[in-house]
Length: 155
Length: 71
Image 1 (cartoon, rainbow over the protein chains, first blue to last red):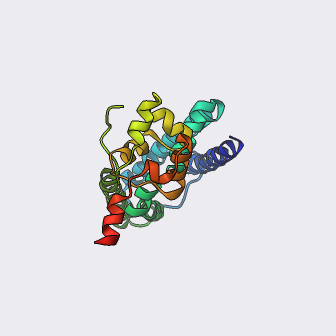
Image 2: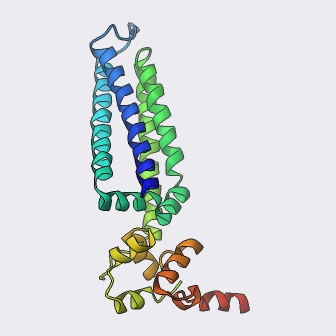
Image 3: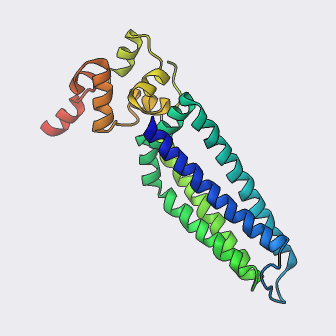
């Protein structure tokens, strides 16, 4: 049980750090001096960036809250830990390559955020590539999930 | 791979969720193992067999593996 709490606690802390960084970045861009913008950049793309960051912040807040609630309830903690360590889901993740596709998508999104200040076309292309990588990961994960899972059967 | 997990579980009036919690996995994995869609790892197979107080060979049916070896 201590091992479970430690692992989930670490995950919660990591998510909180990422959330703080995103909120700090948003605050710097929206309320502070912001980054220098090239003349040919479309304003809408910067608004899109703020929207994406806001969405990511909300999603991360929900995840942190979910983990924090689980840490206080032993039954939920156990269930969440077993879901995290489930060997069948690990096999699905490994076969689908979803983690590497997710990392690729995150890197593409980060690159698109940087490109937003220089060239709109490059930025949009990178966003499209990131979305494609995410969709590919979802499709592959769905395929292997269906292959290695049974439909919910009667008990 | 066929297993006797469902019969053993029902004999002890256990739900899939309860068995999953006892052996440290999820209900969906237990379901998949019972219908033969997923083959448990050695560690999980051992935990399930030990929970029922049986050997791995008594819980999991290796006749397909034997046929493949002989064939």
